[in-house]
Amino acid sequence: MDEEYDVIVLGTGLKECILSGLLSVDRLKVLHMDRNDYYGGDSTSLNLNQLWKRFKGDETPPASIGASRDYNVDMVPKFMMANGALVRVLIHTGVTKYLSFKAVDGSYVFNKGKIHKVPSTDMEALKSPLMGLFEKRRAGKFFLYVQDYKENDPSTHKGLDLTKMTSKQLISKYGLDDNTIDFIGHAVALHKDDSYLSEPAIEIVKRMKLYAESVARFQGGSPYIYPLYGLGELPQGFARLSAVYGGTYMLNKPECKGRI
Image (cartoon, rainbow, N blue to C red; front, side, top):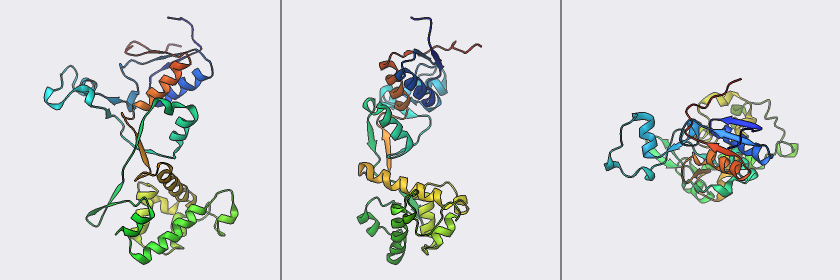
């Protein structure tokens, strides 16, 4: 093993692995170490034995729940937007060649005691009971405005300055009812609460455009994709990129620490 490196990275979380991958591509000599025997840090995906060791100590998982290799349990479960920034980073760096993804078949909302699929095609939108016929027409005009909007092209703004008006003011121009506003704000723009209504409208428009672009990207039933073998594959993908360009990896090194 070499004793001199340009860069030493401790921990194999996603940010650390992106860093080591990019530095290796830049022809720096990288040593990457982790005290755990797996990649991913807090955002890893664990098999059954690793999961048991993390939360149960030295206990052994019961044989009745299956083989360890049949499990990939995300410590920070989440989906990825198909046209989001992270996916663009994966494509730009070529890490996608080390990963396999699956498009999520659909997303759903709970409304008035029932579960409904969030429409991902014009036909699904036409059939959806989430809005009445006239409300769909009004919502359609709003979606069309968002679709055509280009931040650097004033001709698409229709005289509106989205940096100065709130989301509530923009939506009110299309006469949408509270249920539709709820649906757009939380199922499409993915806001956690209603505080977005008093924030600049440009943010909800950007979020809605990202949602629509992500649905269109892979022609799936939702805007989401997911690594086939868990989110822990993401840091591993960048680790493979680093290794291809000469990076050295050492796992299961509990004594590793930085000393200045």
